[in-house]
Image (cartoon, rainbow, N blue to C red):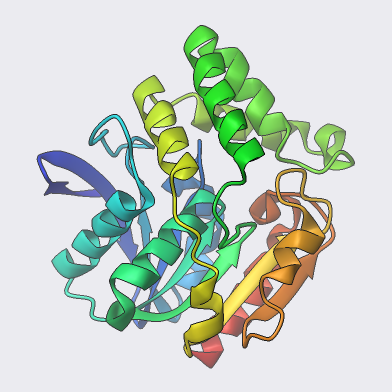
Length: 260
């Protein structure tokens, strides 16, 4: 794993392969290891960069709030360090929010993006209240918060079938420091609505969502791309498509990269 310093904060990333640059961004309570089973296939024809976002994995915390813009700046800093002018970004969940912030801040650096189990919309008032509750819950009982949070990301059908995989995700999530969790919850709560980017940008875009996603309402998420050039891909399971529909996701993304 490689590191750079950004604002006196260690940022951890990996860089594998040659070709079109593809940046893979993890979600909340995840880290770059979520992509480990994808890198060997993706890097055969692409240069694959994975980045630990602020307060996750081996990247340090920057402050008490990690905004999506802060994370987008981190991604841009890594790409600048690697002298990459243009990249495709795939963002899972919170990583999708970061991809959208990046698209707004650095449009000339973006070749295409994939929102994976993510949304362009800001938090609803109800969701903001839930973020505040989550902050209290994680401060009260860190391990319990993580266990419950991770289990609830999978479709109900898969919670028993994928117990081994779910335990692995929990183990990785437990590496996330308390400050990183709280700073990300605050950053997601205050993020901007960026639905306009789905309508007004011309580069290739994909929205990939799960029909039984317990976190994002399928029909509401789908509404965002009506009358746009965004390609919709639906998988039959939950919020964790990289685990619940791993092989289909791998094929889908490889096919998409070929078209860029």
